[in-house]
Amino acid sequence: MEREQLEKTAVHYPYLRGLLALPLGFMLIMSGLGNMEWGPFRQEALFVGSVVLALGGYVLITRYYEKNYGSVTPKKRAARVIVGNVATLLGLAGGPILIDALNLPFNGLAVSWALVALVYYSVAIGLRLHHVLIWGAVLVLGLLPIWGDPATSDSVNVGLIVVGTAIMMTGLFDHRVLVRMFESRETNGEMSNVRD
Image (tube, rainbow, N blue to C red; front, side):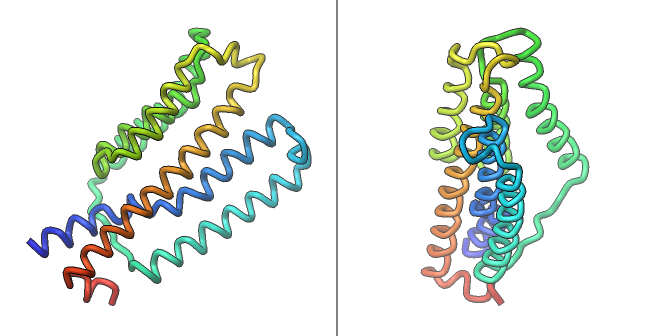
């Protein structure tokens, strides 16, 4: 049983390094604000600085995880990874295009990201309550008929801000799950050799 629990933690580890989502969410929010040219975001230098800050944050967060939790290389099945990546790209790009082509009053970006996130988490590690609550809320918000014509509104940019916020929230909760998983294994004496 101990080995089984350890393997379960190791399998989920790459997917629960939630702090790595913070730079991505930050960049989506900054992109939305920059595209709308809201206040100080009219300055291109602010966006360039945001990119540098996000990349630096990603590097520091990666080092934090490696130092505190080690690294795990999950088994990859090439066909499954390729199909998953293609499906994700099609969902993220095709959803907004389809909603726009059908002239629906929805936010295609929010709807697509929410559906892809829910499917991703259900396949990768299993849906948790915070995944359902956060991405379910994004899905409902995206399906509300309040967005108007995407060509004449800032709905895509607002969608970027909503999705960026959801990514950051999900990342914080995923990190919390990861910390709890490792703490419970350490308490049981199961993780004594994992960090070496």
